[in-house]
Image (cartoon, rainbow over all chains, first blue to last red; front, side):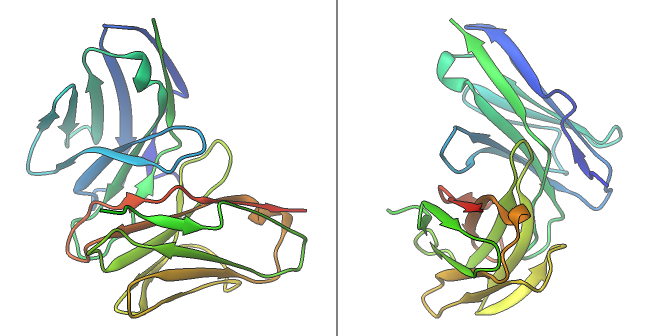
Length: 113
Length: 112
């Protein structure tokens, strides 16, 4: 039972354009969401997060949007750069002390120059 | 400020053997979580340690066990290795009261 789903295995975008990565979840107990980026042979790197009391959070070129009623979140990268090419994971957890992260299967982003 | 470190980086074992993986958390962090990442999948939660006790456990058999030391570092032990245990093992550290976890580079385990 996949509680966090990333339905697009891969995405290809031209340099300078917007990249939009999507994530859906089913567990209504999730109220904190994170995006991680992973390069080959490295561990996941934290990018940005959002709690359920907000619908948007920005950090530089990265913006995460949360639609609680649709149980959907997305990560926007503007403008996309070749160095953004990596696997992006969406993760979710309830906002309680010491909770595990539940991850999606990831989306491979390729930014073409 | 050192991030999360893990050792070894790579490991090859044969079926039935036992393995110990090590993790040092990011400076100041008191909570360590372990994840298994199979090829083409997202990380799967194994367990979490805080104050030297296992606080949460995912859907993994008892062959997987762990320990946290007073300096917050942690070990993951896997007994009676199976071919299916071949994966990237990730350690993540955090503050107990915060949700964001920071990952180490992982240990790549191959079971032959």
